[in-house]
Length: 320
Image (tube, rainbow, N blue to C red; front, side):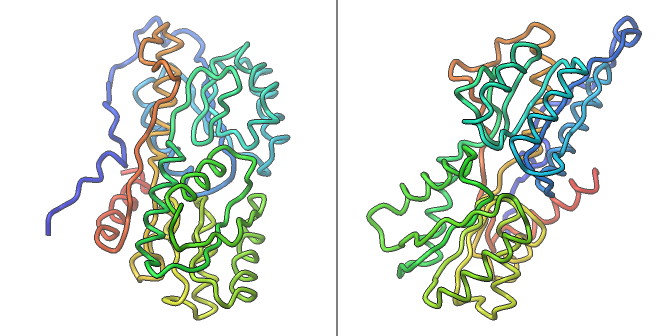
């Protein structure tokens, strides 16, 4: 069997490996922060990218901050604290961009601001580094058509439709399904509450006996769907398509319960965001595209390549 190359998913950036000059080391370290939207293994992968960037730039302190609760209010509190600490650069996955424009602009006025994972294009952020979520949604839509060629009713599950990445993925899915025979019966949200996500999946299975497909749009949604489908004994009857590379999601792909998953590259979100912040703070902005978007590609993981991909993820999560 031809070996597939997943190296880009586990750290495709070029390592500089340069030691900081003595004069730089003698100065107080500047801090960079990576603020996420929810606690999930997805972000553990991003943390490995941040750690690599920090090894290459030990003259900076780089940290990941996970909110105590997945809300715009909690992110505001975190940002206020970071500004009080005079953090030099911040990358953030905005939970509710429409309501966060004011605080994000305040951050951008005092620090270097990037967005990642979920954009806030109306803000003064300098650049977005992450997935083209409309394109990723289209990929998921194509997987849905492959999984359920005869058509039927599908439900989508996600944390909140306030986030740009959720809205854009749904948009992409609808575009891919347009004119076809798959009906989106509902989009169910859980406010990033894992227990509620599980209840949403269980309720859908109990109430919708003609449900043909369930689609998890955020990293934790698909594992909740996977467990609910298996406990209901509906594997094979209800098709599943997901996003991201949670270990349970990959197990579901391997055992056939999940048709496929659209994986992003959170490692690159962390690595490229930190490297980019360092470059901007070194007065290098020439790498930023005119549209202020650095797009990180996605891949489809299915039964044909899941084993090799699981091996890469195990290595990455061990930090090796």
